[in-house]
Image (cartoon, rainbow, N blue to C red; front, side, top):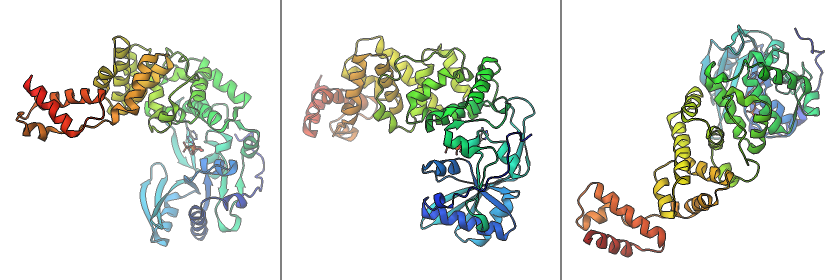
Length: 432
Ligand code: ATP
């Protein structure tokens, strides 16, 4: 079963651990002390280990315990008054504790070493408690299957059972066994994500497995067949990457796009130019790019994809409003006032989406009007409000909104209007 396994190498990364945030380091060492006293073996695992070795900051503490996480969680809560149990899932053999250190909350995920058995491809696995080797074997890639002991007697010692250290050095993304992508196809999205994010290469054999899996057709339109929320999580990570243009290129080139829909087509011009500065600040960058990708599909297929990915109603609204408003703007003659009217009630992310679509499709007219809207018009506020109009004799109701809207249109043309000017305009409108 563990064909690629060798004797455990005694690499120790204590020196690298000393460089992480002091509170986190102290916490790891304290947890290790309690684990050793409780006769449990505890290891730091996953992304934090990988990133410490690569010299990146990652403060997500994932601990595996051989083989009783809840016992360690209970011991920690008992030992430290600033540690509270925030969750415990006996079925999954996991627990979460939160430490309060100098007013800062530091969550720690604890999991018993587990084995996963996949009854059939892409199924949710059956989980049972196992030893460290099997826990590491169930992981996605060798670089994510490193464990670092946090016990005092060998703090920092790395359990490198699948040559993860070599792969980190050689910048390779490598699965642990040939059925990895079949067991869990979301790992293919993860492979692309880590390759793009870390600037690594998907190792040759792993690439072959990925290509074969995608060519087999088994994973075409996967989100119609499995829980789409798991795919959504991975797409969110992938399209939230800094180098999203590269991520999308790899998404198409690798063939993993077919999991969403075989009808998707690579989008034009993505690498050319995008309003990246606005997008980087937007926490829903991923959603905006997903919308760009599905925009040219038929509306009912777009809707199916959003539903299958288990999007929230807010997310669906952002995508739908963005796509429909864009096509509306493309099909009529527009100026800054009509753009304001179209955009004023739609979510900010939809506006960003429209801007991106305009830039990608080289629609300079829409692009520059939306730039103007984002940079200036959306910031204009009226000095008067409904009460001022009521003071002028307007009855409460829809009329107030209509008048304020007309004054806003005037202010868009003349942003230097003061409160008195706005009241004068209101009076004029009331006379008409
Ligand atoms: P990042 O910091 O970029 O989120 P990460 O490696 O911490 O990266 P997570 O999704 O938080 O990513 O996963 C934590 C760890 O759990 C991984 O490092 C990996 O060992 C394991 N893991 C996560 N998802 C899978 C999966 N689908 N199959 C196997 N192992 C997985």
